[in-house]
Image 1 (cartoon, rainbow, N blue to C red):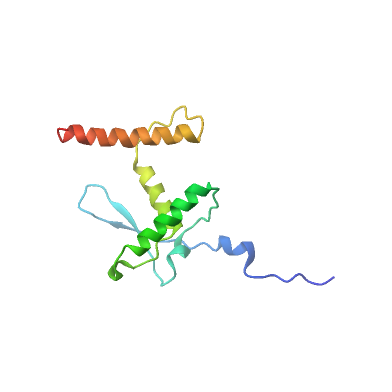
Image 2: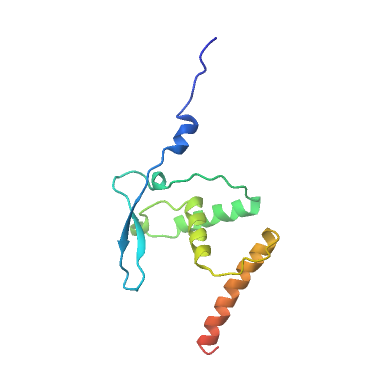
Length: 134
């Protein structure tokens, strides 16, 4: 029996995990912010621990692609430190959602989850307007 030819590194390459070093950074606030610092010149994507596949609707993928192109196109050469990708956008959205305090009780489905998020965001904007006297 002939040995099967293996192309690439295979599934094991997914688990080639590199851990970024956490270093405390003081931004002037009372709380410390954790910042990732890479020790070597390896690409940023190699500093992430988990690879995740997600299912998207076509309109979501189209929006991500459009936003990615807009961001890359609308920046000067001095702001081209790293490539902005669909993954970059998704990670930024996740970080934003982590900061939103919203009611997670009795969420039946994705549509209701979205409504809870929208309510939290609109409530924050309305609170800001009230504080400004509007």
